[in-house]
Image (cartoon, rainbow over all chains, first blue to last red; front, side):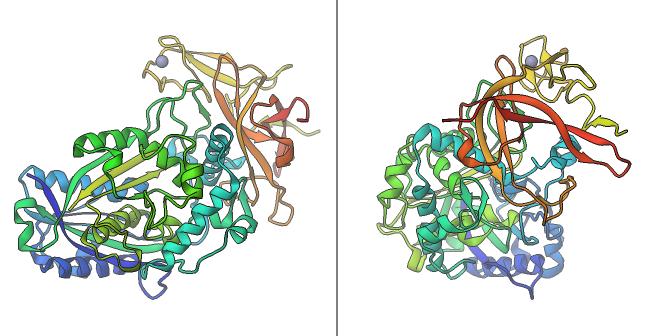
Length: 380
Length: 144
Ligand SMILES: [Zn+2]
């Protein structure tokens, strides 16, 4: 039994002072129900997550008290992906026919404030100023640039592309293109990464309606099938965020592991994918994730990005809605935003950010602390 | 007279004539970990012994922290007096790659692969006058 996505809804990302995170989630949920032509009362189950905007299951207070089993999912940046895996299995097992996955969030301005104790690290680590995700991303791309000859200009081109795509997406936060020079000359945050090379915490909500594939046509003429959904945590020896030390012998990170598992589950390979949304917490992440997900070899990104391959009209369009760089990162909603974008792409409804050539296979990838990754592969 | 105390117990030998970072090494698989941990993350073994890590290694990667972090950052600095600091992983032969602050914050004086020493220096002063000692990585010589 396959699983289909038959309804999608989004609350615009960015800053919406007038609405709580929960209200943004409810907005997305109502649009998703409407898109599938169903009512909240038709939902047999729900999975959802929010990191900073209260409990996801409080959505019942906005949408109606129907007795629905609503299970909260908390998995950092992989929250959306983990909710999808849970919903996939709930339908695949035959337990339910139709249900909802929702994610929303609302974060304060500025970098996320991590507490070492929550991750089992000593207080000293934060006191001396090592508890910064920005440092990890900077050090990972610094090493990668050294090993694979990636240029500063290529870093900036990733941001430039993100803001161009954001300008074509009415739900994006940052909708003004920014030049390569302006990106390189913006405030240095953590060498080699400048302010415009990082995404920011933000707000937003996304909801999806999933059902058993043989019921899909009851809800939509254009179902999109969830062919693969995987989540992995780090193995010993991978280079991860918030690591006071790392092993001399390095192994592949959770992205590589989750990606391999997703391709195997879907029975397709990287070359079959027409459009991809890859975690771009900052520009280096997008560059490295192209290779970690199998879409190119290490070092090929320099030429690919300089040639424009990752633009909407290119040979491997990456982050067609502007990604985290242009949408910001509301943790609970971010992974589901990628799925929302891919459903639009596969339906041919992405408007100005639609990739040409009637895409049939689409890929999403998230990565987050303390070393987790979730992947989905969608097919129309 | 000021009292010198380590920023955390068990992170490095202190007081000592020649202080050193402390690691645990798994007796089953031989993997070293920093800081000392009672369970080996490589094989889940729980039989470990504590050893001193080498004092010289090579810089594996680095960055410069350009703005003052929010809490739990705890130095004697204010946003006005904050000085950007280097951060890096030092590869200690036969041990692990340890993350720490660098004494150098000029990006032009840092290179992947350069030799660095582990040094122990005052990091901040507590209200009672105690000097808190932390470990830092210091270039052995400036790169050409
Ligand atoms: Zn072991």
